[in-house]
Image (cartoon, rainbow, N blue to C red; front, side):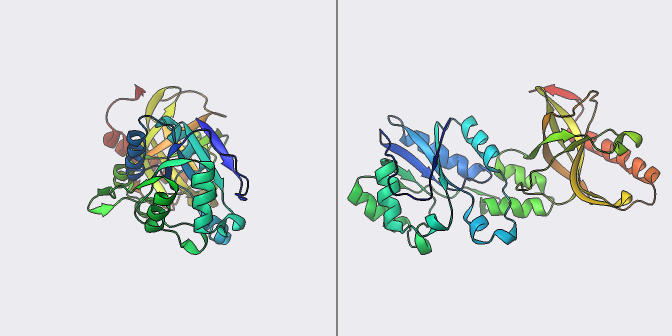
Length: 315
C-alpha cells in the first residue's frame, strides 16, 4: 500500500496522474461501518484507482492536547488494517492549526479536485469539513456538479439498534463489554505490544506472564482481568490477561500482563497481540501473594472454559 503524506499547507499540492474514487474519514477502529464504506469504494472503482483520505493527528488531539486523545487504532495499526482490506493508496493529511483554517471551498478545489482528481467521493451523511466545519454534504454535491465529481453517502451501519461509531466502541470497552465491542468492530479489540522483561512475579506465583509495552496513544479498555487470545508465530493461544495496576504489590504503573495457556518458551522482545474476548473480573487488592496466586488459577480455569478446549490453533 502506498502512503502519501500531504502537508498542512495545501498550496501547490502535486496532482495525481489519474482520477480516483476517494473515501474520506478518520477510520479509527476500522469497524463494520468503515468496512461498508470501503466495500462501496471498491464497487465504484471498478475501472479506476481508489484510496482513502484521512487526517493525522485527530483534530481533537490538536484542539485539546491536554485531554489526551487516544485511538482505537493508532496510525501504524490503522494503516496495517487498511492494507489488509486491499486499499492500494492512503492520502495522509497532516492536520494542524494551519490546515484547520482552510476554507471548505479551498479544500474541495485544491485537495479533492486539484490534487486527488476525485471522480467519486464516499463520505458519511454527517461529514463536515473546512474552517468552522462549514462544509457539508450539500456543499459537496453542489461543488461536485460544478467540478465534475459525484458524491455517495452510504446508509449508516447499525447493530443492536444503534449506528456503529468509534465513540460507541470506546463506550463499550470502557464498561468491559468486550464481546459486544467485537460484534461492532467485526473482530476482537486488540492491543499489540513488545514483550518486555518484568519483575518475574508471575513466574513466582506459578503463572508466567508476557508483559506488553503499551502504546500511550492506544485506547485502554476497562481495567481488570480478561479472557482472550494471544498470537505467537502463526499460532493462536488461549490466554488470560490483566490490564491495570498491581495493587497487591503497591505498583500503580499501568501494564498489560498476558498468560498464554499451554505455552512454554521465551517471548522477550517479540511483538505480540492480545485480543480481548470476555471481561472476567475487576482489579482486586489481595491480602497476600498466596491469595493472589489462588485467584489467578481460578482466572485461568474460567478463561479456559470461556475460550474452549484447544491449547493452540494454527492461524
